Length: 135
Image (cartoon, rainbow, N blue to C red; front, side):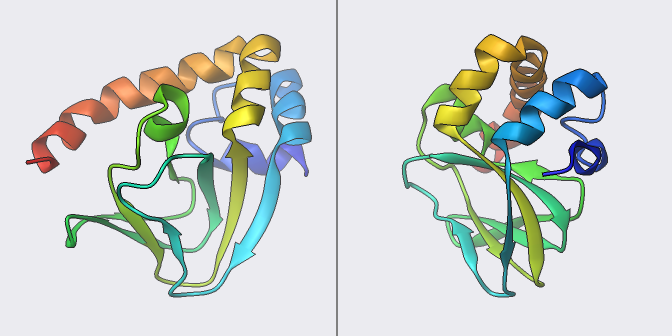
């Protein structure tokens, strides 16, 4: 995939071009149709997804809790912290996603530790939201 695509994702935007090139070598671009359930609450987490194009709805306990758009990402908590999915995400339009598997994230931790630090920082910023919606 083209490393320039990663610049549009908030998680990757601050990283150096050479780091983006490494991430791009590991990442996969995937297209999904509207209505596709991307992740299921309670499932084991195997992938981190970033939205290149399209929109999605986040549900927790069957309740709508957030909307996602191009530049957003999800699945980081489960992948980085080996936790089960804390929400479901459903495509509300056709989407183009950038996908990194847990295995690829582990490999990136050695090659581009800054990217994993970005992930951990994002998790810490989102933790208050996650905890206020669990219950």
